[in-house]
Image (cartoon, rainbow, N blue to C red; front, side, top):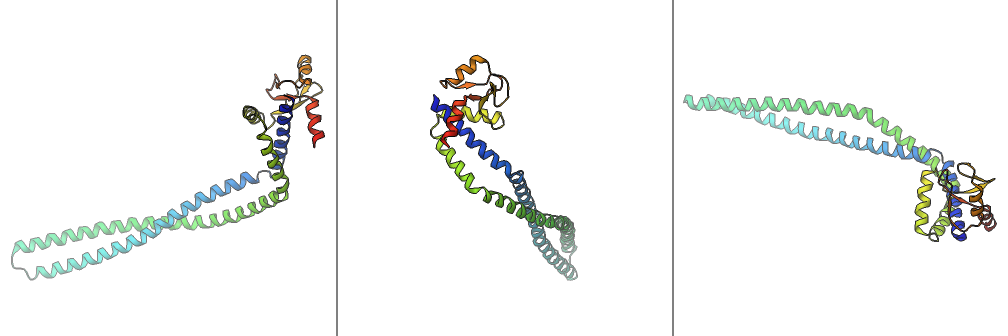
Length: 243
């Protein structure tokens, strides 16, 4: 049991060291993450707008060609009207002309719609592109700042992570799960020492009976006020002497 307590306390010290390194980075990791997310979203919007403009140009050319072709048909129908001899044929050509003209009117409306969408997309792009460039610049600057901080503490962080891996494999899985649960609920502090008969987490007094049991290092004890694991000075001293 004593070794179990030492391992849990050691894990807490390693995690505390990692937490302190994370605090040195400040908000940079969060800021970089938010900038990346924002940039990705705007780049997706940019691609969508560019696709609208591209499609509009293609469709506009297709409509333009259809209108020209349909107008040519109308001119041919009109020429044929002068050559026919029966009213029935004349009426048939008139219907063809009317249908062709209706198609032109419909295509001209579609052309207006396509050009309107293209215009809106181009206007949005004119606003969006500079914003994306600013985001890219800011992200590059923030990444550089974060890289410098990471590089400054890289060796220490790797050492602590390696030490954590070695500790976790030596601790019972159930203890690790309990430790992680308490640590998450208690702002990173799951295992604390009792100092001057008070919990090192919530600073509430530990009963004399609990203090006696604690010094035996014979069982895993929890603070009755905050629920953190508490360890004796002996566990703390043994950890410090092992460093």
